[in-house]
Length: 409
Image 1 (tube, rainbow, N blue to C red):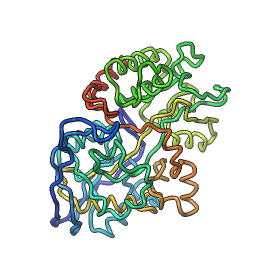
Image 2: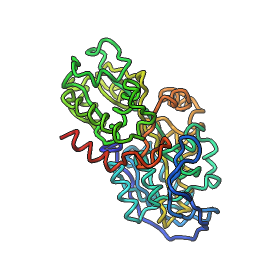
Image 3: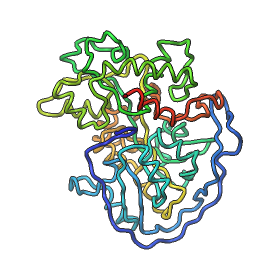
Image 4: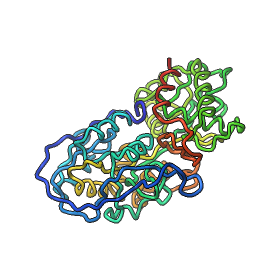
């Protein structure tokens, strides 16, 4: 991830487009009233009318998508890793994938037009929904959707106003990882990365993104209950200011902010970083490398933030039928297992957990563990309309970006 998403050292496929066919669509209104609440703590958004496919037509012969690196492997990087060419052979939809390094870059690319969809993280998806840049998704046209873990459906980062806007793909927690040879007492609280008197000063790391402000807010929600933070992505000005102040106080402790997990792995291996936010895939990589680094990770008692990726259809999609076919393909059990295993994440499909390899993968990443998932506060785009239903008093994402620049200096 970089800025607001993974920057993995993978490459994606870019291939030629073929002829197009037609599609059938109907109009749906995803937002109908002024910002208010639809049920306790559920915000309602004004969302532009965007057509939703009501019948799957013939594939148009091409698919242009924006992706995180590692999500569209075609055998170029590893001949044994290829789920793109089989899709092309099955559907006739030839895939052209544009790799994005950040969620902000993804949003910009989709808004520019020319793409059929994307693999969005929660810090981008709501921006795209409210902006009318993505279409509501007719899940009845995606057979694989029925096998998606229920706890990933109809969540604030992939739906709005009771309507799904995508198909869940994979997810993970932002855990607290530590080098066991240096941090000899296993931490159980995020206080170890915020304590001004930390013995690990200069060797602590934090995720390089405006969305990291939510990590500070989550910590404060447990340690300063007087702030009354109930959702780390729904912060009024006082709550936001307190979170920013905590991160400014943390900065002298930070050895480096990270966005590229391969560089993070190198920093832990060299010993320049011993403690900080991480992903489970990084821990796995450090443990598997030769020689291995003795690291461990926990979800602290305050909980953790995390990410859940969603395949979404662009409102300006020229090949919506192929996009629907792709979403069904990528969310199917065997393919979802392949992608999650290669990338290093929990698959969204229950079907990814059935064979021996899948059971191991799902156990390693807690893929079918709702209780584990419930401890995660998944990235969700902060909006002026508070995600906890308090009205239009929250600090929007643009202000988070400005504050993060000031925090880093």
